[in-house]
Length: 75
Image (cartoon, one colour):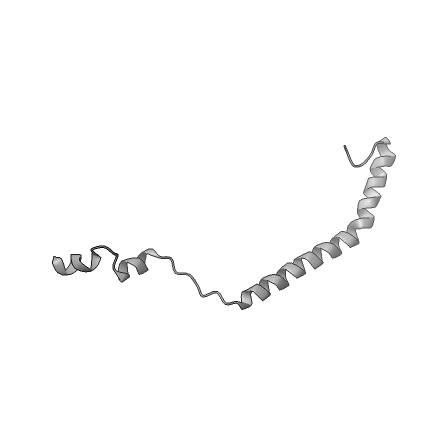
């Protein structure tokens, strides 16, 4: 019994610690570049979509204004 209890007195055994900790994949520094590229692509696509849909949104705003003579953007 002392053979088992001795390594555990004061600290956990390495096997117990390994069993308790989740398996974490190695994260390389290159993932920062991947994240920045994805972020740039997301912003670029959103800006392009907003630019292309702007005439449609303006048309809808004019139609709302013409329909009830109230501001299409509520205050």
